[in-house]
Length: 385
Image (cartoon, rainbow, N blue to C red):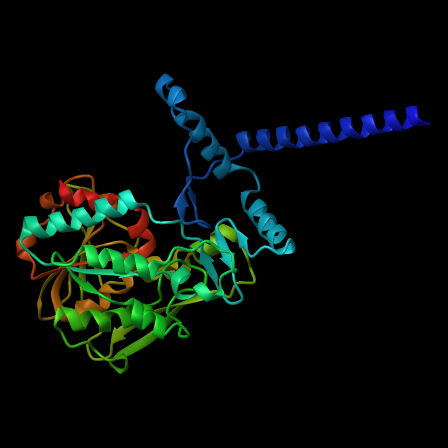
């Protein structure tokens, strides 16, 4: 009897191994021969390409990493695996999947600890910019959902103190920049719809609150909420957080466009995609065609570009904004007080900013970054060159 049990166990083990490795081989073959997409609308990003094979890349490990990224992005049933992973995490009592916390009424990103070296480089970049141009720029660092809703996170969730981080950066910039506190107003209004539930950006209401705080430092009189017609333009918006977990129970978001009641949007955009090329022109700050696709946040100024010049049609001076995408829903409010606003995104610029703009031509400079980007993105160091 024992001999039969042993044979049975061995048979079961062999069958399990065959099924397991057969599944891996089958999925691998299906992945290899399946049609490859360049862009994922679900994740709103370009997918990894198969890496170039060179001896150097094999030696330093970048080829293997590239192959891993390629297979991960193009694996057959990619979205299905994400859905299953999320469901399994929830079934196990976990409220986190793919670095996204799944809360009662929102999704929140897990924020890694700040990189001190990156932060120091960014601070030095802003200081060098101020000194080189003999100007005191304005700096606005915006807390993310993980800070404003930190009390809703799991008790043991690692979560850097963004307020302490922002206060520390502002202290380091003392004398070199005029800092704008938006933490206080956002935290005070945290029960309002100031961040998207499924995306990493703030909503237009959140940006409006920051605009009113910016006015106090930048010396203009802000328009009141009653001065705008609010168009609930986009519905069923499922953003970047949703794409990481595909959790369908998360309530979709609404994209709101706030237009000044009396004058609307009379601006013209000059969009610079590539250095040395003539700009593309666009009437107005909004790209409503994005309301019909997944990437609805790109309704504000379209997709990220190295430089966008906004000719507002309004009286006022000229403003230079160095930013990440949080600025896209803020700048339409600022446009009511400036005749021209130039937005620079250093993530997409590989030359000195001095080749693109003459800072002396502007009456003011504003840096706008969310805290998570400022903690980890090292592109502000480009200001030193």
